Length: 334
Image 1 (cartoon, one colour):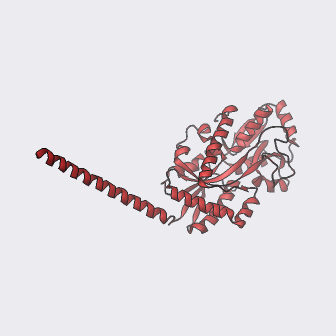
Image 2 (cartoon, helix red, strand yellow; image 1 turned 90 degrees about the vertical axis):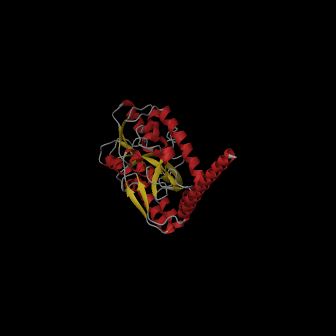
Image 3 (cartoon, one colour; image 1 turned 45 degrees about the horizontal axis):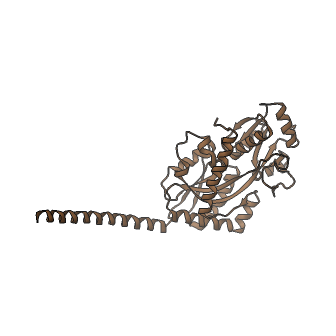
């Protein structure tokens, strides 16, 4: 009887513990569900890990303004550039996973782990893909007083003057870096890479004569080209840019180099799926708004609407493709 009584006592104790744990879990679940149902109930912080004035900054502010209206809470945009976008992104990666910290993601994300081995966070687990905004090709740019009239001129000169041609990029691992390195590999060129923190300072360096050539998104460069401050040698899309329809692509010039920079939204890793889905749904609605589409397309952005699942698959594929490009061309961190 003593043994049976002890066993019963143990069962009662275990049952009490299990019931208590279940109560805690239920309360936590109820709290999380309530928090998600009320999301958002305060302003959101949107980090743009690029300098002000670039394409990514402009697109982010257009989307943030519309998103503020749809969410009923202000979306505050802050520029925090550096290290190919990893500095600003680290802030969001280390934030509370509640969907109130957002970050602009772009093509450079695909090669961060290769180009920045000393990163303080793991983008695979500490950032969550939310929604795509769109993409845009690059223009291969030189100053109007440059000796290069077309891409053939550039290739011919660079071949006979190895190491003497400097090219800017928006940072290590940025699309402007990788596409130029890809062109150099295909054409057999020895170019000197000069990385900047983002698009705006790289373009300023080209205009100021600190570098010879720069691949810049067509949206940013189109006004400068129209004003006669820059000359375009080629564009990087699979087809000619709608913004620069008279300019041939690199592929048309004989080199199998093509690619566009994509711009998108990510948040902190571990953010609840319902919050991610809500953000994705609202971004898609913003992009379907005719006024927003016109504003983005007028800046050369090809709007691309994806579900959260579609965007996650897209990002995974981008990582595979661009990482292969880095390895195949032996591109190393500087």
